[in-house]
Image (cartoon, rainbow, N blue to C red; front, side, top):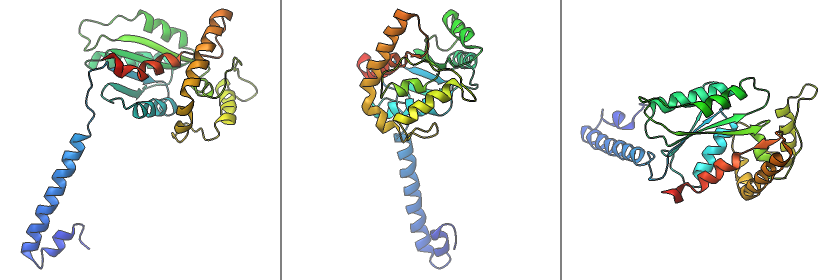
Length: 242
């Protein structure tokens, strides 16, 4: 069979060929219009570039947040970094702001874990000054989690001040994920089937994260820790800022 039916019928009926071809062109035109119509439109609220250390769990989570709260992907842009080290995330963020126009805020999502470059990355972000020729001169912010992003997910289900460290053959992050799986068995870095579960507990996560932050401020503790709630609250309220 020919790949396009109207080509096969053209051998026997020239008029049918012409009619089928016109119908094909109309459908093609409609499909092109549909694709154009679905292209993200920039809204009047601020533009935020979120650069993630990993390429799966946190980008998937933020993209689901964007869909859930119906934010424009032209305003909230989520990308993975070229490298997983914190310094790579910061450097990639700075490079993006140099070349991409109209970015108001750049958020670097970092895991503290055992990364050698963590302190150096934070310092670079704090002291960075955009140059005159940079296309965007955004406000930079670090969103950090200790030991990793999954502490934010765990806070959706329980409040904890339990420190996570490496033990045996398991890293601190692996020990944390083991605890998370007890609360969220469907969790998998590669997909978002678990998002519909955690979104229902978002208010709980924000409350627990604030409580943990207050605890850490009083006790000088840094493990566990996260300021992810600051970014999430900003995204939720983004439309109201226009």
